[in-house]
Length: 125
Image (cartoon, rainbow, N blue to C red; front, side):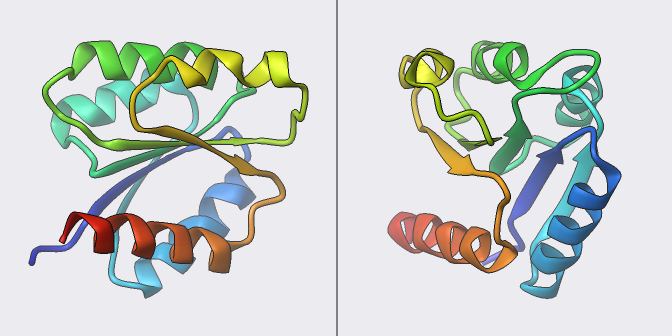
């Protein structure tokens, strides 16, 4: 099986760095983007197996990116993981309408993320 492609989207460079290094250590190929516009440009070059996006970002935020990515690539059923520290249910309601989309609580543990991805890819095998 070939390496899995992950696209990380966050406007905090230290978050991107820590998660990228953790995922690369596990054998994933990881691309990064600082906002939704950069993420869509990256997706035009290489569609990810998993899109991991923060919600609150300068430029295009995750709340805009996630539905747009799903609509732009409807035949590519990649998992979307949305990172957020917002706990209000109304802040999360929009994602329930997106297929194959889940929330991850920030601060995000790299170990928990790796475990979540392992479960996802094991279920596909």
